[in-house]
Each structure stands twice: as C-alpha cells, then as structure tokens.
Image (tube, rainbow, N blue to C red; front, top):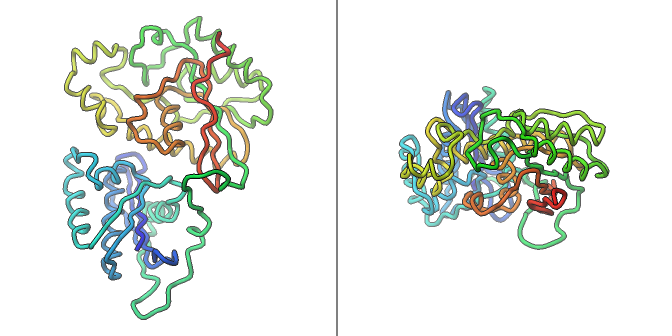
Length: 369
C-alpha cells in the first residue's frame, strides 16, 4: 500500500495537525484517511504524527509492504537511517514510527514535492481548522473505491523531458544588492542593514537588466531594507509596485549575526560543526535551515497560487534563494553549502503545475561587469 503523510504547525510551534492517506498501490484507490489536531506543537512533531497515523492505518488494513511518501525531507532521511534523530522531542516519535515499520515486511521511504502531497496536506489543515477526518473508504470484502480525484490530478515527476504540458509559473530570483556587511562576508540575517553605495548601484544595474523583461506581473520582496530597496529599483523600471512577503526574509542567525565565519568557528566550534552537518541545527537564538525551508516553501506555494502561468520577480537573500533552487532541483539540504549566490545576481526557475520544476539560470551577474 502507499502511505502519504504530512503535518503542519501555524507558528512552529503553534496550533498543529497531521494528515495521512492510504492508497492501493496497484490502482491508486483511496483506502483510508486519517487526521487529527495536536494542540501546540512543531512542524516536525506534526509530520511524525502523520507518518505514525498513516503506518497504523496501513497495518489496520492488512498491509504487508508500504511505500511511504512525504514532503518532509527530515522525516524521510531520519526514517531511512541516513540522518540521526537528535532532538529530544523527536526521539520518542521516531521510535514509535520505527516500531510500526518493524511490523511490516518491507517499507520504502521517498521524498515527494509538496504539490504531490496535497491530499495529506489538506487533511492536516482540516485538522488544524477543527474538522479532522478519519474514515476507511473500503473494507476487506468491498470493491476498491474510486481513485481520489486530487491524487489523479497530480502527475508523476520521474526523470525525462516533455512530461509537463501546462504553462509554468516563472520566478526570477534576485539576491539584493551589497549591504554594508556583505564585503566583509559576515553573517547577515534578520539585522535590517541598509544597502551600501555599491549596493544601490548594483540594484540599479539589475533593474536595468530586467527592464525589458516582458510579461512580469509582480515584484515580490523580503521585508528587509536591503531587499526592498533592490525590489523598488526593479519595480520602478517595470512600472509595478512591490509586494512584501514576510516568509522570504533571510535565515535568523541569532548570536552569529554580524560575525565572520572565522569568528563563529573560534567561539562556537562544536555547534558550527553540527550546523554544517544538519539542516535541523540552529545557531544559538536563531533559526535552522529546516525551519527556513518550511516558511520559504509556504511563500512559494502562495505565490504560485496567486500568479499561475506568469512571471514574477522575487527579491530575497542567500538562504531563501538557495532553498528555492535546491528544492526545484530535488537536491538534499547539504546542497545549500555547494551553491554560490552573489549580490544582485539573477537565477530563474520554471514551476510546472503538471510536472517537475526546471532551473533555467543560476547566479548570473554579468550585468555587474
């Protein structure tokens, strides 16, 4: 059987809920739906709760083998044994899920994009709204139910060309111009530092580059000044306003804010090593890359819903731009440390509603030469 599971938290931590569905692997028929509210909890707790509910439902239906699909990279990697479970609140849930896995003859875990996990996501949101769904759609002696129309509408996204037919939504990703901290390569997260004089010139040049771009319907920006000023320069050339999207703000580096990498390595050597090894580790008083990804992908989903089949310019920071690129590439979180995203550079992604995303451009800054 196929198990699709998800969970979410409005606030992280905040009001949380989970959702899971079980499908017949041969027909895609929807066999069971499970969801529930968790009170105040984190996204990770909710995602593990969805996995546990889905595995238990599959066992109740007599499954011997399960193909588990989730859009939580963390849960998939931990349950596959490739990442360690370090957080104390996760260990009991991971152990409970592992105990259910051992009751099956075989389980395979796979990460899928959020767009392909829409049924479980919908159930999680219903639970957070106070209307959980728990039902079996087919019994042991019944004919399989009709395939879920939501699932049928989501295509497979395996390798190969030409699978997508619908027009994509195109995101032109722009990192802001140089701030007063950029030349010194200091951690610059939530601190609202301004553009430097060079940064204003870089903003002017990237705006001039995009001035002739046809079909741009919106310019969307992080709320921080260095991004907003860059976005305002671009929007002025295009004759548009600037829409602020709070979830596109840079990663919160906490106590590392304003320090160089060498200074952090000297003062927090062990924590820096852990941070580099796991997206779930946060700087002291800051935010993990896993949490950054959660909110950036929420922003992406809102923008794709608001601007389907059109082009938008998104002005943000290194962390969010890298997150969008590595997600489009279906690449692991460690890819964040293998990308170079320069100030005022341009990257581009086509997001297809019926197929995989396509990265068209990465870190192009020829307009600054």
